[in-house]
Amino acid sequence: MAGGTVERVLVTGANRGIGLELVKQFLGSPDPPKTVFATCRDPQNGAQELKKLACKHPNLVILKLEVTDEESIKATAKEVEAHLAGKGLNLLINNAGVMPPSTLESLTQEDMLSVYKINLIGPMMITKAFLPLMKTAAKQCKEKELSCSKAAIINTSTIGSSMGTPPSMKVFPVISYRCAKAALNMLTRCQALEYKKDGILCAAIHPGWVKTDMGTDKAEITAEESVRGIRKVISGLSEEHSGRFLNWQGDYVAW
Image (cartoon, rainbow, N blue to C red; front, side, top):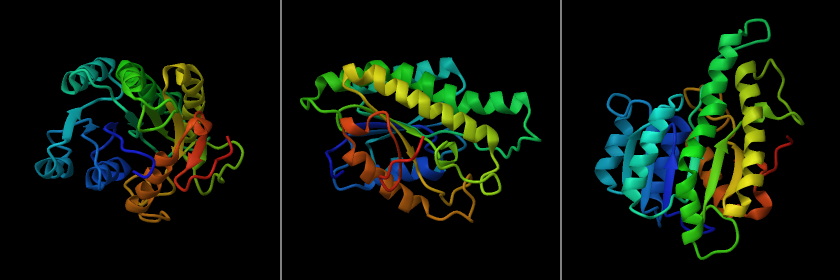
């Protein structure tokens, strides 16, 4: 990465789409991380692409993680800690999420709570579980300035959560997803305020409208293009970006 090497990174929701592409590009970079942790709900049956990558890249570790299960999150954090053997986790990318169709007319209380549990509470609890490892990474780094090579939390957001420049409901009719990601943006801001003293950078990134299972084939860019941009943005993040909401091209998104 242009702004420095990330030695140890963890990506959630890594078995498909943007998460899988992030893993691929980290592993395929000229100076890859020493360890890439790729998590997904069902590594045994739903991670064939990750398994293929693991055969070629010994620095890839595939782990089971259910983002709605606190015990699963804690267990995964313990596995990562054991694997790191005293080292810290430099970069946590909270990428796992769902985007079920929902309108103001169709949305139910159960729908909203289900999406919030995955898209907001999940990243919150995952970050809490891995925070000690990130604090360790920040302490072990000689750099004084905040950066993703030191310690950083990246939360995958969406332009649909923007209150300043929101897309129309016809273009983006997913109420529960938009609301949960708007809350995730505030969580990101709160994390940035709280964890600055620990040397941890926090930012939310809109990956663009991406051609994935969630984005559909009508989307504007491929996962490869999106992740190439995301990695470039990540490499250039510094203290001035902490707590901010950016897109995959590095532009600020209106809250």
